[in-house]
Each structure stands twice: as structure tokens, then as C-alpha cells.
Image 1 (cartoon, rainbow, N blue to C red):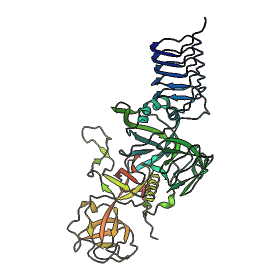
Image 2 (cartoon, rainbow, N blue to C red):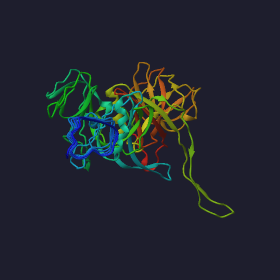
Image 3 (cartoon, rainbow, N blue to C red):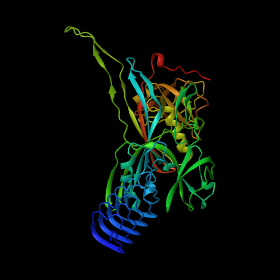
Length: 520
């Protein structure tokens, strides 16, 4: 007798079943290697190291599988932890859906299909690069080294779901490799269920600017940076029962057109998130709360975002610089004096010292909140306008006292009579001011010095657009630039954005850098 036919086999440890084994059911705690020709109808081990081809098990239930061997013909395959599968294994399972790593370049890539936990803000970082050199005259020479900012997202995962335990396993296979990353801050919800085979999805509040091409092939020409005009619009649909990746051909405010029919049914309320290419380059740290539940942050470097529309900005301009609105204070403003002294003559009798012009390097910390999609786009346009440390702007300094107008000022006067009791040294340097009328109107002007004359007089370096009534407030504006190239955007929700910015006060321009005001 050469073959054995056993109906059921139960073992605690099986080293290697004999070839030709036709068990109808096989259960074991540890299986080292299943031999060729195994035709068990039910195969239920706790640990399987490497099944041997060809495996014809009709039902596979296991806790840990290191690497299945192709070809694996298993109609039902349920795993808890799956490290990697080969390209020849035709396995369709919920555990495999979070993996997409394949060995050839043109194969499908992995999708980071884990929900962001909105209990923590989603941090989006825009990072420019600017070279700042201080000149002997006291001015700054600034040159942009990076026209398009680098973009990274810090996802916070951990919802007490069973699939969150696969985040570390997913990163182990995709760390440093190109993958699809969603943009949770631009998610839209389905307003009606979508059946399998439909060509459009009913959504609410979709913006075509947020569904940008997944990759950017940037090129600098005479018209600026180009390369966002692509056709590959991809999106991720996350529902309670799973997720799927779709390609879009058109984006409307209430409709998303698909390039192919929808594969599976999607219930109402599912989220549709834009997808872009990115890489997880930074190590992730996770903490385990209880078995099977982890939480932590994942940082991914994404494709650069298209520039915002410049027409959204309606900020007033003063002396060729935009005027920024004031925000909530984050910290107390700090001031320091910076100067460089060089010894030109080393004679012990009368040494000659040379210094450049010092100025107080005052920093202003502000926290800005944008609670509407249009406000968020306006702030993105402001950040693109400054480009980190490159360009300057006017900002209410918050240090100089607010002056009150005591007499009506005519546009041809060239000065404004203000209260003289609170006049301090902050108003003796050339700067700018914001004039707030009692009726809510506002105008801007360049200021010179403020001196006492029948109370107080604020001399102007530029003309007024209209008369200033009595009771108007005068707020000093400081000529500033950002003190950092990296700007962090804290998304508390898709419609609530927080920014913490630090502005550094610039000295008064001298020489060739001085901008001469020309009245209109």
C-alpha cells in the first residue's frame, strides 16, 4: 500500500506531511512546511511558515503567515497578519487590500488606506528655501533657492480598529517607496449610495482645485513653473465595509465622473479623498494601547501642490508691499539688537572700530485661524506670495501704542494730529500705519516721525486717499518678513485651519533698496 487516506488529522506540531496526503481536514498548532500534493479541504493551523506548491486547500484559516508559495489556490483565505505575498498568488482577502507592493515597476502600488484620526490635527508642512545675507548697509539680500515648496503630511492613526494594527506592517513594506497617499483635508462625502457599475458619484462640496493630478512634472519656463497639467486624477473611497481606488475624469461641485464603472457598491456617507504620489521617508512611532490596537503618527513626503489662484487675494498694497491682517498673539513679542563690529586698526594707541548699522530684530508671533474653504485658499495664496523668507509684507506690530486722531485731517495736510500722551519712541522711526475710521472704513499711509506740537503730530510720508475724521484710530505697521521657510498648517477639520507664524521686523530700506513713494 503506497497511499494513505485519512479522513481527519489532528496534531499539535506537524513537521512535514507526507506527499500524496489527501486529508479532508487538517488542524495543527504549528506547521513548518506543507509538502506538494496536499489536498486538504480544510486547513486550520495557527502558524504556517511556507506552504509547498501546489496547495489545493479549499479553506485556509490561520493567524500568522510568513510567505505563501505560488501557486496558491485557496478560495477562502483569512489572515490576521500578512507580511508579503508574491505576484503569482491569486489571493483576494481583506488583509491583502492594504498591501499593493509588487515586484515590477509598472505594477500597482500600495495605498495608505487608513483613516486620519481627527482627534489630533493633520499637519501639512510647506517648506521653501531662501538664502539670506545681511549687507553692510543694514539691508538684506534674499534669494530663493526653491520656487516650489516641498509638501509633507503628518497623519495621526489609531481609531481602536483592528486594521490599525496593520499600519506598522504596511510601512515595513512601503517605507521609502512610492505609494498612494490620501488628502483627508479635502475629503467629500457621498450624498446618495452608489451601486456597482455606475459612472458618477453624488457628492457635496467638491472643489476641482483640490482634485489635482496625482504627480507633478515641474518645468521652469518664461511663464513660471509649469507641470501640474496632468490627466491622472485618482481618488480613494473609504466606507465602513472597505475601500476602493477609482480614477476620475471630471470633477463638479456635486458630481464626480469615473473613468471606469464602480467595482463595488458604496453606501451613503462614504468619504472620497484625493490621492497623490508620495513616500514615507521618516520613521514612524507607534504606541500599543491594548492587543491589536496601536496609535501614532506617520509622515509622508507628497507631490507638490499646484499654486493657488492669485486673484483670490484682495489685500491692500502699501509701498509695493501687501498689508496682512492681524491675528491672535501666540507669544509675547521679543526684541534684540543685532550689530557686527570689525576692528580695522590694531594700533594700541588709537584703534579704529567699524560697525554696521544695527537695528532691533523684533519678532512678532501670530496665530491665524481660517474657518471657511475660501479663507483657507486666501491664506494659501498669501503664503505662496511670501515664499518663506523671500518677500516682505506689512503687519501690525502690537508694540507701539494706538493713537487717536484729535482733529480732522485733510488729504493735502501731510500730517495727522493725534493724542500726545501715549506717544512713545516706537513712533519716531519711519514706518507705516493703518487708519481705522469710526464708520469702519480704513486706509493706509507711510509715516515719518511723531513729535509734540499742541498735543501730538504724526508726519506722513505719503498722501491720504480721503479725509480722516476725528476719533479714528492709528495703528503702527511694521515692515516684516517670515522668520522661517517651513510653514506648518494645522488642519483641525476640513474647514478649520490654524497657522502659527513668526514675523521678523526689517530695517528701513536704505540706498538702492529704498522704495520711493509715488502718489497716484
